[in-house]
Amino acid sequence: MATIYPLYVAKAERKGRLQADVDKILCWLTGHDLAGLQAAIMAGQDMQTFFALAPKLNLARLEVTGVVCSVRIEALDDPLMRELRILDKLVDELAKGRPMQRILRA
Image (cartoon, rainbow, N blue to C red; front, side, top):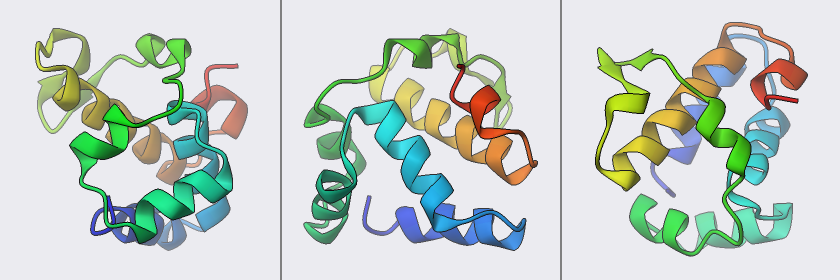
């Protein structure tokens, strides 16, 4: 997570979005509060550990469908890979300028 997080932030910032937007998506997805998210990043957690230790994965994340890197999210059997692709899709939507309400499936 510590190595991928800055890449997500950089992608969002290149498109005029904020680090706070990326943080909001990650907190929504995993149930972390901002302090917990920063602690996970600072601890250098890998993605598997990050998702395994997530306080409460948001059930609305299952509404995220589509294709990321030529792979259909809903067709993935590996739970970790599915979570990663959901996160990728949410950050892609952020970078495309979609409203936060729509990204967070509100």
